[in-house]
Image (cartoon, rainbow, N blue to C red; front, side, top):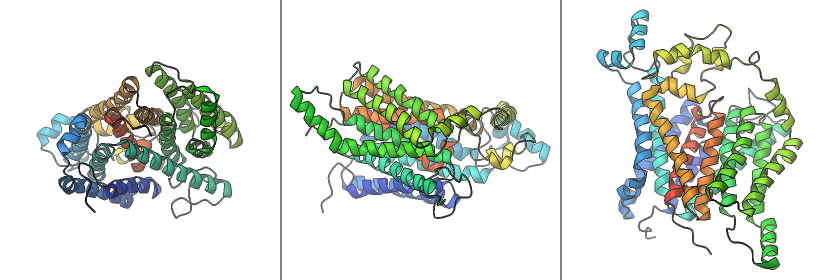
Length: 465
């Protein structure tokens, strides 16, 4: 078959989608073998873009030119993580991190790296380049409306699978994760993840993409007469919109069954916030959009939540206190580390080993191999040299989504921008008290959302059938 000119072939896009489907299955790829396999697959796909671009007569430089700024920022972060893991001259180490030099002199350590655990940082550096690869693959492949819709649909079905699997395991009492019995979080939904909070983070992003698909299906034209309204009503009840709405309800059930406090809070805050923001940026309060968001909030909160234990999530929120949580102590413990390593960080992946030297006696070190705050962990492990470019990348993607909602009137581009915006905001809220961005599959899906926010600005207008 003759390859389609100026576009990557469909089978290559299918491999990309398959990789996204695989990422959450082996415990969220949160193990050495799964992380290495995921990174290897990302590099293989990226390597294929060069010969495929040549065969299909694709100008890679021209396709990537609109995205050079986010690619530069993410690439800089990956490069910095790589530099943290390699030996540096004493003068450079003294300039970037005098506290590390003092610690080495005090303990007699022979490490000459910024990272306190170079092996772990090397692994994270490889994965950082894998995330850069997946960002590039997303902006290269999602260049047509049909592919944008298909990618969003696949993300929804991945979330639906996790929801059905996690809910079945919880409601049936068969407590299995990924081919192995669960050893933690029995009685709550975890899907194929280790923790309920990791599943909650994945579902938040999947739900955002699903709601974005619903937004993309909103009819921007007013109905002409009762016949047209009747036809649209029947189409809503019997067509793809209703099936998608059922899928979203099942995902909300699973989100509630995770009993994740901030997972549920983040979702139910980001939904009305992003809905109102979308209508305000569009400068019109579309009746269909109002009905959609009100129905989502009412059905999900009042019906699904009440039937499947939303009150238990509320009880967990009410019972949370400084006495029952040790996270406040952890934040206090890391303050000296932040002050001493604010510029260059201690190396991504090094938090667990470094914190053991600073922790309070009452804190269980095995419960805090990562901080339950992505912002503080990134600031501590990356330092300001790496943290600022990462923050700028997220801000750029948020800006891209908002600009798309403000400027564009193509419904698919609006839905794509909404999906990216809600998914990013929801996980950013959740990240204030959890570590979703440290989980490879969730971090990868978050990077895909960052890329989709950029793609929405450039996506060609969808032809109306």
